[in-house]
Structures are given as C-alpha cells and as structure tokens.
Length: 341
Image 1: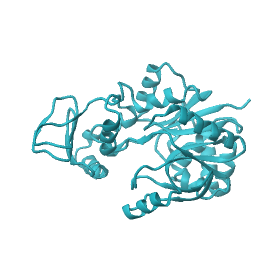
Image 2: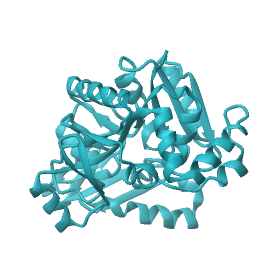
Image 3: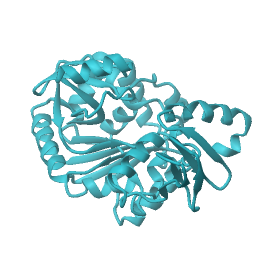
Image 4: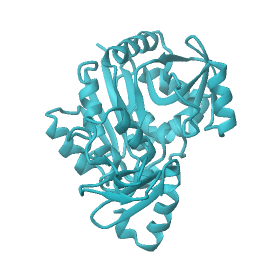
C-alpha cells in the first residue's frame, strides 16, 4: 500500500541571516519561534497530514537535526546525508529512489513559516488528489507584494503557463498587476515513480548518477565521489520547467520565507508574540529600527536600521538592504572563517 511521505529538505546555510545563522546551526535550526525552530515547526505542521518523514541534509547539520527531531518526539523512517550539496533535483531524486514508486512525496523546505492551517490542509489535500492522477504539483503562493526575492509561476487555475526567474522591481509590479502570477514556494507533491520517469526523460544524467549514488550509501552517508558525479541542478530547471505533467495549487495560506532580516522583522511586526529576541529599538528620536539579540537596546537618532547582536559579532544594516548580507558573509568566510562555522 502506498504512503504519503513528507520529504524535508535541509541543506541551506542561511547566509542572508548571518551572523545569527551559521554553518552548523543555520536558520532552520534557530529556536526563536516560541522557543522552537522552523525545522521543528515543519514537523509539527505536517505530522498529522503524512504517514512518514524522510530527511535529506548534510554532514554539518545532521547532529543538530537528530537532536531537534528527538526534542519533538518524532521519528524519521529514513534519512540521507549528503557529503556535498548538488541542489534540489539530485536531493529529491535520491529520496525518490529510497521509496516505493507509488508513494506520494510531499517535498518541503524547512525554513518557512506557515499559518492558516485549515487552508494549508485544504491545499495539501488538493495536491494529493492531483498527485494520485500522476501530476507533478507545485504550491504557488498568492503574492501580497511585488517581491523580487522569489521566483514566480504564471498560471491559469491549476495549469502552469510558465516559470519565471526572480524579477526586477518593475517586472515584479507587472506580475502583481496582471493577477495571474504566484510566488514559487519550493513545495512539491508527486508520486516518486512519476517524478523519476520525468527526470529520466529530461535529465537522464541526473537520474543515472543519482541511482548509482544510492548504492554507495553507508550509515546514511552518500559516498563523496558518487555525490560529486551527480550534475548540480535545481528541480525547477531539471524537471518542472520541461514536463507536461505540471499542475499548481494557488495557495492562500499565510506563507513567509524567513530568509532575510527584513522578512524576520516583517514577521515580528505581524506576529510579535510568535518570535523571540527581536525588539523595536527604543530611545530618543529613533524610529522604524529593530534590534535582534538578547540585550536591552536603546538608540539616539537611529532610523530605518536593523542591528543584529551575537556573542562574537555585531551586524548593522539599513532596513530594505538585507539581501546584501550574503556579500558580507562571503567576505567574512575568506577573512575570518571562524565567524561562519
């Protein structure tokens, strides 16, 4: 009998949330959401919807992942540890080879926050029905702003017309005005066998090298040489932009990609009781500024700033510029690698 399995992807290092996020404890493991992490919230959100959990992560994160799984008293039927990341197409291919072809995989990142659980469940059920009919399903989020940090899905009801890359501000406004574009959430649903058939059709090289890599796994760890032999590619490029079996679920649940300090502050403004260690900066002639850390923070004449305080580093940036944190991270990684570990 086939199962519904939540495949949790946990490979990113959350560089845009540095120095809060580090290689060994990236953003999905930060316990700042009512003392739980986004990873733990993902498990709690999906455990009543699925039969099993699978995890694919990397060697830097597996210890913390296992610890946090234990804390929420859940168990995973299987996991794969990648010695090196090869993007989402290989990760999902590896997991698809691990299960029955008729099993339905509900593939989710673990660094998003989702509310409106009744709406979420309804969208999930729609996706399951489409997956049972051999479609590869995406979840498109109804956009609330001309966001330039997300990819977009052009759609008509459940039909996907095209996938679009992260747009510039002008194009994003045009997408929003047209009314037929969704944010691409990076969540998917499909039968494992159908996905592998489409992958073999469009990227036989990824299919074959992933199938070979499965045979090298020892103690959950993929052989590094076998992993490096898999071409690096996103699942969107490898399959979803090519396949004729694609459907989308226009989704109205509250979805927040907490990938930057601006998005963290935005979430705090909407849900101040659901996030820890963020405060509006108080003081004299200070406005629209926020402090992230464990201290009491005051300012004089500070406007439109975000201040991030950790044990070994202090980051100060203007609001609206947090996409550039990755540039600082890359620089620090070269000059003082200890600060990113």
